[in-house]
Picture (cartoon, rainbow, N blue to C red):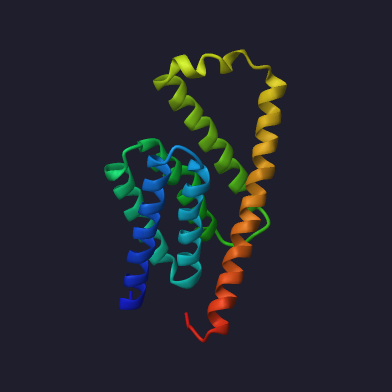
Length: 171
């Protein structure tokens, strides 16, 4: 890894940890602020080699689980935001990748539901009474939202990379 890649990885990691800290400390917009860390990681994967992105993801993951006041934001970064971006960039671009992304999203959602059901039974006790069709509808809406997020991640990265190339900043 070059010094430019190491420095950029450190800056992106610091920005991601700051965004995650703000998401855990501020009362509103937790998911939107935490999503900024996913955009930063996506940019790092696009601008540098895959290895730099994976190392930045792992460093943000470790620091977020140790330093953040609200650990749930770190878990969301590990599984949803950073984990999804890392999975998306590590897998080759094939037609069946969308199926794997959907399986990953549903598996993580069920895992988080199971963890929350064990550790917070009073909050999630009310969810058990929900009809099966409502749960199915929730998963369908979640799939549509995540496809939109995936397309938006690609679009923002493409626009940012085009902006940098117009300014003469090389990869």
